[in-house]
Image (tube, rainbow, N blue to C red):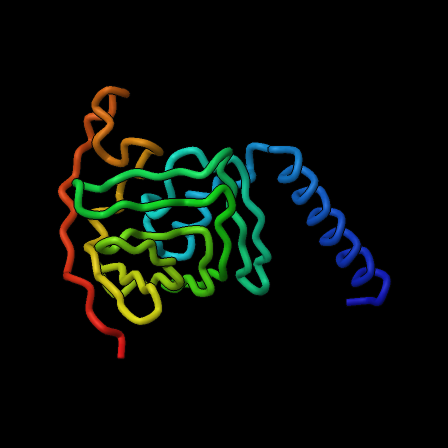
Length: 172
């Protein structure tokens, strides 16, 4: 390939990339939703609640931020209470989210930050640092709603799931 032909090819690739980025930042149809992005890393969409208003991701490092209009909380089957801040951030790669911030779970009387999520086969393991709990992927096929979680019958959501888990276990 001649140097001129190579230069034209590189220029075309750069212009195409800029056009795609411009379309994505303008809310173009080709811009994937945050739920599609997390699915591309092999996570189910239900690890995030309904209502994410936007996100940023660095595809090279996996650094991401996802945004809700307000903070969000709900109970799952009355056994777990979850809170999402209006900004959720961390690093995502295939089957692993690390340095997670903005998500916490109530364990007994304490609110603990979930700092890592690992997919292992058909289970998700959520770590709060000193302890972790595993849940079946089936629990995360549907995104929970702020205020009512998965039990949103009053909102017309008849999807109701029973949360199945292994109790918190030490990660040490």
